[in-house]
Structures are given as C-alpha cells and as structure tokens.
Length: 130
Image (cartoon, rainbow, N blue to C red; front, top):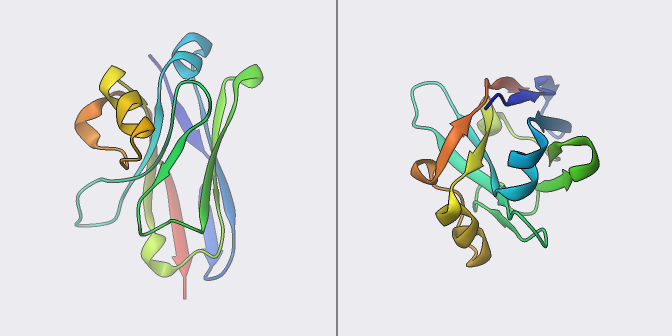
C-alpha cells in the first residue's frame, strides 16, 4: 500500500500549513488514518487520527485546538490543517493507515499509537521558524 504525505514546507511561527495524505481508496475509506511526526532526535509521536467512518477525531495535547484532521473520500485524501504553528512543531510528518484496533482507539478518544498503524507513507518536512 502506497501512501504519500505532502504539503510541508518552511513557515514562520504563527503561520499555517495544510498537509495531504493520498493513498488507495479502499484503504483510506475503510480504515482509521493517523498523522504522526518525528522531530530530530525524538521518537515518532502520534498527533491526530480520524476514524474509518463517521469522522470521529482525536488529537494529542500538543496540537489540540490548533490542528484539524479531515477526510475527502471522493478524492482519496486525508488532510491535516495546521494553524498557529510553533517552532516545536518542526519535524517530518507521516500519515499511516490503521489496523482495526486503531479505529477502536479513535472511537474511545485515544491519540494514535504507532503500533496500531501498519502502512506508512513517506513523510513531508515541516519547519517552523521563530
């Protein structure tokens, strides 16, 4: 399964970016999708996820209130709108397709855990300058 994250770039603190995740329709539509990020020297962190249906969402405390995840099933896309960006948001951002347990985790409000996601795309770099 091929996923591709895009939309990263260099932005000043306080700015916005919208990331896109594109992949095969049956997988994107039928599974939970998670967004993760990895800062230099740090572990990959789950920051947001969306359920396979009814669009339930979760966010980590570090991005809650600033980031919004959404789906466009007609175009096989999942978005991550990132507003009020901070230098601490700098990192490589990845999208991933979740297992059945990932979907359950979204529905109980738990931010994504790496082990529940089994198909990963290439990341996109986000750099926020102060």
